[in-house]
Length: 425
Image 1 (cartoon, rainbow, N blue to C red):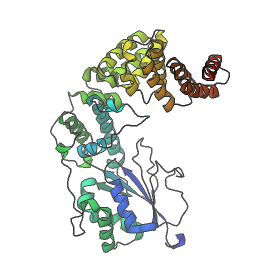
Image 2: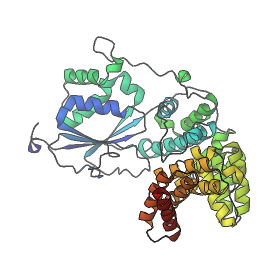
Image 3: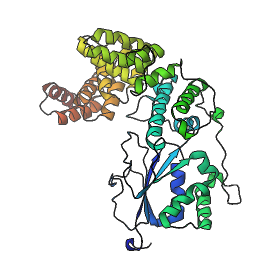
Image 4: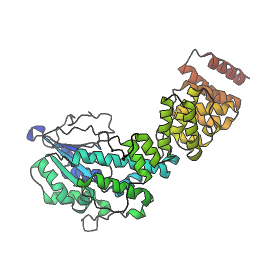
């Protein structure tokens, strides 16, 4: 590696829509420049400086920083940087992104995310993101930016990447670049070292849903004309319930003629959609009408029992209304719905314990204690549940955990005394 005094370190700042070839580009640049380039993924490394441009010390020819600009706060004012703006046709991008769907704690229930209702909400979020990305990065292009369309990048990688290499080092070694592209494209190798791009057949995707994807595409194409996308599906977003979800999320989307309230306009176009109903319920709570909120949420949980946020709202609404949780909020489906809401799980587990549904209570409270181990109430109630099930050793573990969180709690002290007495026999 050359010393930092031998060249001025260059700053490459990525602004990419997800699944638009960012990692493919990063691999090519890494193979071309080797240890003369530092790649910064920004979101993951604990030692990242979180600065733009990167302030990481080191003798690099260039630093390439990743960003999807989720909140559109990425600065555009680094004049001596080169911005790499990447984008992709909306339908293949959405299908590729949907392929990453997986189960995890801290995320909405996978069972709920697999529903068409949530798929529509997710596509509406993506449509708004496309529009804002287009407004910021495409409509008013920076003079120090390179725009990289996904299909062009994969079909003509040398043509797409050569300007970046030229900007970094002042020249392009064509043979070296061809070799870097081949190394970065093993899955597309035709056998002679030349990468082969096979376009995605969208209809073959397991997530292909024409009724949802066609209005999504229509909205993006109409609101983002400078991307130059060609339609792959024929459809319209006007009159489709997806448009109601976009209205609910995008405060900059003009209201349709005759409408004065955004949430009401969304509700009329997407009636009964759980995300809209939850927002209506929140508004009822703000209006001090918790009973009406409970009524709305009961209907939602009856048709969408894996909608975790609805349980959280139901718990809040019932507390405000000073009434017990209704039966629809304490079903076994709630256990799979509330992995991101341990507080709701605790309240549901408490009701199950009171109803003597001990196995379900143990399941709910065990999950709550695992996801939120510093919850005194989860540990304390789980200890009580396990005692009633005759699981004294396990009960002691959770009672001791609760005691560590609240050493002076008298009910928990009594539980520990009873457990010690039982185990002592």
